[in-house]
Length: 182
Image (cartoon, rainbow, N blue to C red; front, side, top):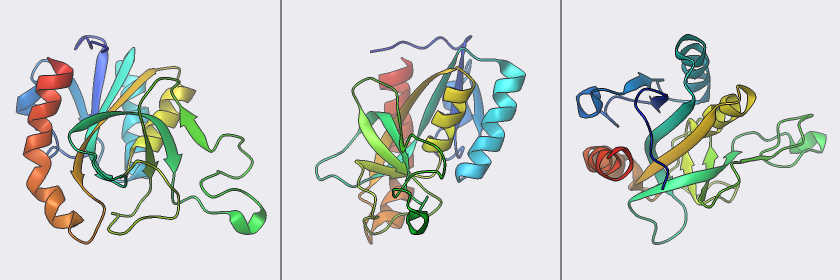
């Protein structure tokens, strides 16, 4: 597994509830807020300011595949709410761009990013769903930054997702610190 250096790595998390700052003292961390636009704005500013070699995203995600629990590395990113099929583009494809998927080229899970909290399976088939990772991966690709993404399975993207999500954040933060940052 890759080890990360706090001097050259920027931690990127949507909410402090997902990874409290006091759990990662010594690391540079930014909280982006929820959603692709907030994530894009915050990461772009942070890359300009801090010029990290590595960007490490941690957050919660809903599982779409049965049996997924714990923390997983995500290496394929899709924009699940980009839908311009009426103009002949594939579901998830940004118009006039060739790539539907940002693929980091190493083993890991796929994640469909969108600006909806998922409580029923979305049309675009991926392993996980979240609300920021695609935007972060795209910025890192454009800015030539090494990007790593780890998601804690907080819920099963079903009708219990909202309740499960809020109850599991502290567990995920402890696992991330012990398994990834240690």
